[in-house]
Structures are given as structure tokens and as C-alpha cells.
Length: 66
Image (tube, rainbow, N blue to C red; front, top):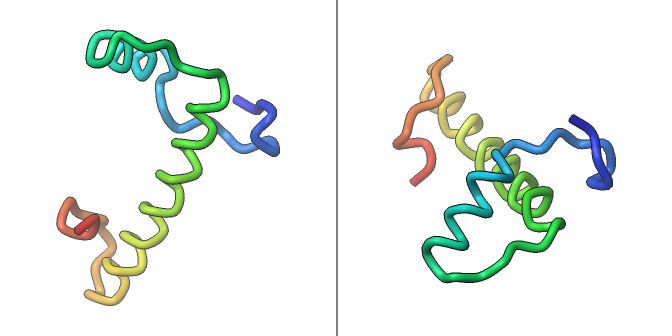
């Protein structure tokens, strides 16, 4: 799925994100939140991949996000 995020794929389910924000805080969610969050996820995943590589693993694990 490409969008105005420079053609990058959105990595979150926007409807679930919006529902979570609405149910948690009673707030609406701007259209540019999902692309911004996807960029944050990409950064975190890249860091986790590097940690797994440093440990000579081919599997990214939950501990790689700490």
C-alpha cells in the first residue's frame, strides 16, 4: 500500500490504531499518524535486526527491542 509517505508501505492497521486511540483517550487520529508511526517502527526494527546480527542470530526476538 503506497501513500503520501514517500511511497512507503504502512506497517500498522490504521483502523485498529484509530480505534485504540479513540477508546483510550476519546481522541481522533489525524491521517498522517499511521505513516509517522510506520517510520518509527522501521527505525526500531532496523535497530533490532542489527542486535540480532551482532548476536549472530537469524531471528529477531523480543529482546532485540530493548
